Image 1 (cartoon, one colour):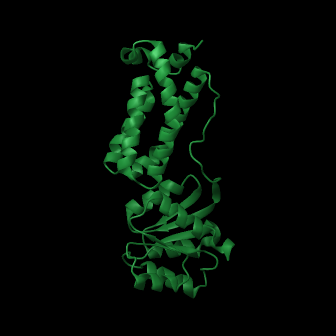
Image 2 (image 1 turned 180 degrees about the vertical axis):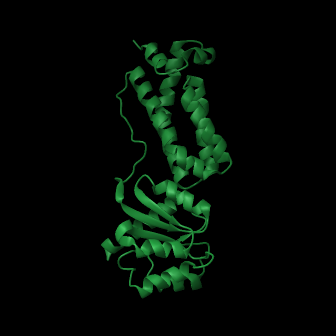
Image 3 (image 1 turned 45 degrees about the vertical axis):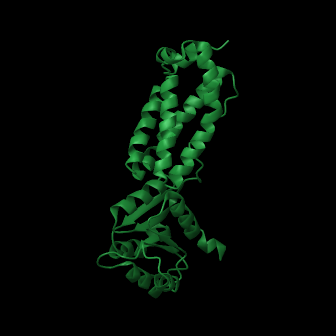
Length: 261
């Protein structure tokens, strides 16, 4: 027999839910439907986050919020609501920064429901990530605070992330690379003062491309720009605007470039 005290002791608002469902038999039956669907919904949430599709992300977290309210998962409902509101504002930074909180609570509820219904409990990881490599550093060079913060939030749990607002700061980091252990640079082309091309010239003069691979961040995807930057020996170009999946692919390619040649 199912023990409702398991749900209550774990913060589920059963009393409020029964105002909707009427009795525990209907609650339990509908909870089975929730459990059968929630895994697919969490996968869609992950997919839309990675491609920065905030419109569809908002739809999915809204649905998760509604289901959570129905079943008395008040904490998950509150977290989902915050994600819904911020994604509707196209606030990708909030979504990335608080995504683990959402998934951790969702997985807690899934495991709780599985235990309550007598299902096999499978604890899912928050997100598939590579092992933390804190002895390696990536350098983000961009005068845009938005771009720097976005990339930093994605990778700060995996790598040491250094940021530079212009080419002069970037060259200072690179000239002290024995200390920083930089394994990849994402370099914006258009910055005030010492710009991206100046940094590329510094790399070329000092024969650094073979030791520190570089990929370019730019909104200019013209053939002229591509031909010019690839003539230096850069790895790839990340075209603005980009999403989380784009920057992960380019950074992985950049970091491991020297292993593939």
